[in-house]
Length: 590
Image 1 (cartoon, one colour):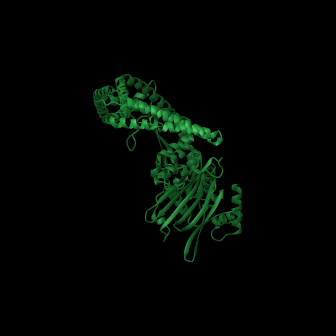
Image 2: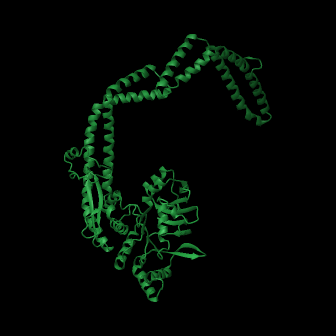
Image 3: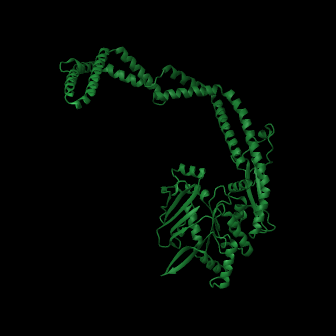
């Protein structure tokens, strides 16, 4: 839900800060006061295209910032996490809601910036977030109603088939995985004869190499020793003498020091703390001396061994160059090649197993998908009737509404439709659908809404026939009928009351109120019969002072609401009768 909107240098607005509450938020005001500017700014904030005409005259930069309070939603969090953005926790750590701050900085130069929770973001990310945050419906702003994907979601929401949808998605994923594995096997079969020879050669070469991890490092070190035997012998001899053999060798000096400190400790106990360290030094020197002597005794120059090492290092170098640059990568290549060869040699058996599993997985998917299709068709007729009743309540008495469900294999566009999908009986449906298209995690159906607003006009795809005002009212009816509360968000209706009044306005207001039970609703209206239902009533005013035009928004208390409704009833001159009527409207809307 949108809780705060800050706007700076947009159209007639210098600086504007608007706070919204849950439920039904109504924006009213004189024609041209700037109500639609607020809606336009919100549209830009959530990823809409910025037109430089929106920038306030004389300003080079503009800012739009919104604070959203969002409920826990795994899809939304996954989307943000993939972009490296985390949701902020409000003051109460135990709260189920999180804060999301979106800010757009706009300029005439085109150097626009987007920030989400103070991190730079892209406009494409904003558009992906939009379905979770705001749904705008206004003149020319029907962002989701004309999308066929939305039609399917609205029907499924009405039908209450979420469990069945999950079963279809799970079976589709399993089927797809098996298809990919079988396709890989078939590709191996096509390349089998050529690939088998290559794999066998590489495996034989690597096995013959008898590779051992770190063998090259050990051999290189041994080679260095053999190449420097004389120097190493001299160093060992000198070191051994300094540590152990000379009269004043280090080991003898340490022993003498230890004896003296031990005597001191008999008089001053603090020196006793050094005795363990001296004993450790003595032990280390003795160990070093023994190691020097042992190493020196083993030193022997061997031309034959050196040649053997050189040959082995050359062989290892050749294998490493061919198979990844190291012994580790060469061994990994050997393991992969052995595994691939086994797969190819066993491909026929595995392919037969996969074919059987694939047949079963396809039948399982179609069984779930056809069951989902039946539920959709059963719900579609009730959905049509409910929508048409709702349309009649909002001054669209002659409107016709149809839900058309096309099965997988249906040819899209203007081409003729295929026959309905048959029931799967012992794999029969599976065979009849081979090569068909249109399967997905959402089933085998393509759902599209058809609509006609006038008598005598045949229904046509909704996107091609609904005007802006009709689309806004139709979406209102669809949202309330489908009880769209799976992803509560902010739903905006701009000029939803165009061309209606009286009793119809009251019906529209009642539907807005109902929708506001599950979603935050923002609505721009000129009808007092709609404004009476407001949970939060915001009045937009435009004032001219000193040759400068400014827009302001005021949240009205009960007295302010009475005055505003009275103005909407009578115009500029507000009468006591209008005030009484306004009070009655508010009272009867509770």
